[in-house]
Image (cartoon, rainbow, N blue to C red; front, side):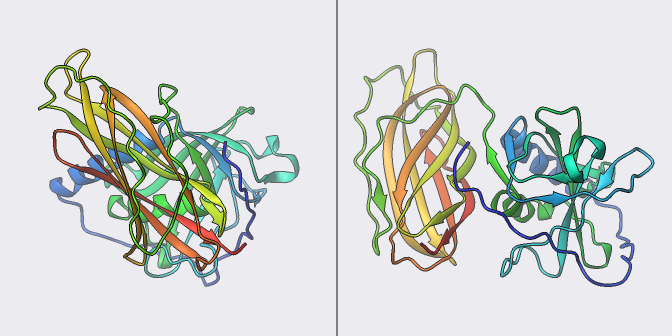
Length: 317
């Protein structure tokens, strides 16, 4: 599990009671889109190991199923996730197993994946978790102003918020392998710089049908101090190769701030069929101003490009 833990205060949303929001029934097309978005997210989250980034107090009350909920968790100062106010609740199935009724920073979970509180209406996003080491479950749910529920269209923004502010997430797939021999750490310069490509493997059978598909993108750690090193991780699958076949996969990593490109790192690597975890070290210049950056990763073999993205934060030294 990567280093760089941090703690943050848990806030309580102000205001009167929440109002129930009514909406028209979704169309079949919208339902299909929601299923597709959720399936893609769960390919990244299913079985992932997660650690909590701050203490979360759990209230003593229980619902009819025995679950207890936290105070509201709100975005970090200056963080805008979606338009309007929003917050999250952490629910636990057995508060009695928590010393002092608090889920402590560093608590380990296994993610079961994203689901809908209302599966039929595809509404009310929630993240299902299992505690590691104790027989209890946890659930992150999300609510907006006036009781607004969130659906599949909001999944991308909420998923990024969880990864950036709430949970430190590591992939679950034990088959992941390291990238080809790492190049020297690359600093973020004012213009693009590309690392040297590792030597290609001997050619195999034809690779015209090969396709590389991004499964996940992350930065380790999610908060990196200016002047220190981060690791840019891209997990992807190479498909469509005959047995023993090898494809040249072009990996491109672009770092952006507010849509402006800071640097581009690119390499071509020989890959066999299967899932690969590719890493690229990146030294953040000491002079870089604090703020949220985006990593946009693209992979391409013989088929169309596949892209994924994530956010990370640069802090002062």
